[in-house]
Image (tube, rainbow, N blue to C red; front, top):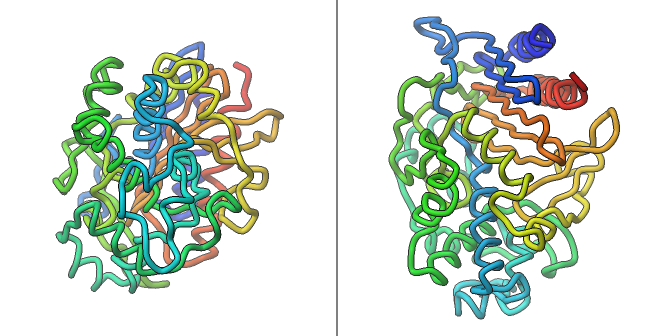
Length: 358
């Protein structure tokens, strides 16, 4: 089995990804694979269990905290954003009175995604010019509120980072403590996830780590983007860092019911279909901070991904948590065909790893 995972990791490297790491936990033990280089200058090996940017995988941690608060009867999934954050969601047709907490966690709010405001021009120049700038959650939501909603709340699905910025604000409003503090107290500490953190606007990854590279233009250079783009890498929608070992432990504990009561875990896994043109595999469904994706061998897996400039990360676990995998790819191509090939190879790697019975 180890050879197969290594072969698939090599295939991802062969598709143009500079550095690849894979960690698969199974009932028979752990399988790891590395391929490519840790950085393009020194050509050192990819870091072994190095620190990673979790990107939007952060959303699963945030959704877990919200659902714990639901279990404690401090909040309801049917409460509206207006009830919890009066006046925050309004303007250009956006109406917090029609959007529930469930809509936020499930991306059925229709709210505009602020990231197009903070990175309007996909170029290396924009990255270098703005990467140190930080916004408050309220500022990010205000940027999004200048645009009309994509659809009336609850009638469709569209991924929007604004949803989870609001979820983080709701956690603080309800508990009086930041979402970061709540993630530490409710998830990281109880599970002993000592290598996972909520660094906020702190831009430097701990050592060891593999460098991330973004190609901004087709045939252009690979730009070192290990320093994140703070306008969209510093909030409840995507700012956490961690290791593959910790991520696997978190997702396994989550689906095994160690973090949520049965009712809230069932709510998290209650899904809506994701549109075919949204970039997800056919048959993908979205729950509350957790996606369900079909497997070629039948059934499916639960998980979440994350991406930013120069990296893609995916965590996936079988529905009973028997097999859990984290894959991290440390570069992204500007060429649509190359990017599609890398995405297909990444999906195949996960499918092969989770479909095996040994």
